[in-house]
Length: 158
Image (cartoon, rainbow, N blue to C red):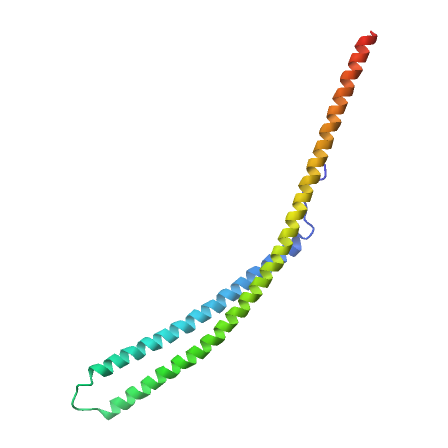
């Protein structure tokens, strides 16, 4: 009997699995960053739409408050600037996400190579075990045949 299956590169497999899992966590963090920036852009866009709607509602007023208009204009400019900055940040974060996806693909590919190697060794081990089992069974059959033959010869000589 050859003993239990032992994959000599088990440590490498474990390390590569850990690397892939770590890369998955990095990618998840990068995706969360993208979603956070996108949520900020959406919130600023929503606030801008609400402010535009408010402006349209007050358009029919005969008396204009210049200070309020100036404040509203500054607020709208700030919201617009936040949206533009958010879009730039979003583009950067998406670029980072793509880089992290590429790293994850590479880590997965390296892990897959070791897993395939392990599978190949496992199949080779199983084949070897089957051969050894067949050899043992053949040996037992030959010994049984020889014993029966010896018994027949011994019975014939008595």
